[in-house]
Length: 206
Ligand SMILES: C[S@@+](CC[C@H](N)C(=O)[O-])C[C@H]1O[C@@H](n2cnc3c(N)ncnc32)[C@H](O)[C@@H]1O
Image (tube, rainbow, N blue to C red; front, top):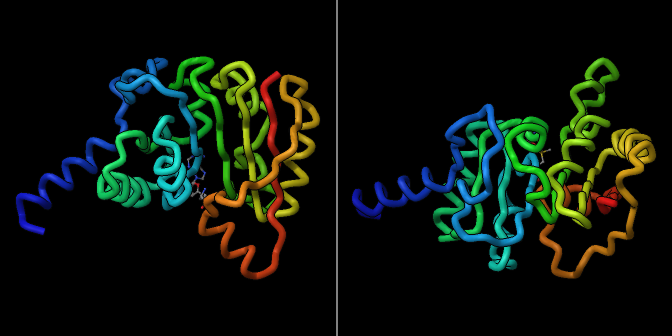
């Protein structure tokens, strides 16, 4: 890569990052995706493997990833720029805050939460993402009939989630049949290779 090409590539990666103009108000989706299209969220997108694979497979949709670790945000932004995807962006922000305060109501068709940090120690459980308040925030950003898809490799966390979901009458559980072309995340692949189960829940906004 020539120095000029590298500069252009780094600028493209920088443009992929959505940096809200104001972190204290709801932002119209048109501010980060000029093209109107169904919006899919990948909360805690990690290395972006799932986000990129989905964006490549579904050019008719827009994909926004959230990630709080700056190093991962940088890497994902570069991968998106390298792939030349105009329908994928990433924001360096806490997931709950993003859906509670930043995104407008009813803006998303699907919200994915894949392998959220399990916080196994009891005194860390309040840090878990899946909580009643988070469910209310997800309900707010989902369009009517929109879906929340959650998957984890951590059984105790899944049992915790099941209790949270049971107390959310604003969602109904539906079946989740994993399609043959489902893009596995690194975490998912690791666990499947070790023969360990993946726990999944799909909930539709009522
Ligand atoms: C266990 S990894 C899973 C990554 C990816 N979803 C996957 O399945 O490969 C969890 C990721 O979520 C990020 N994360 C955890 N809590 C978060 C939060 N509250 N807001 C934004 N990102 C978060 C972590 O930094 C990490 O990259």
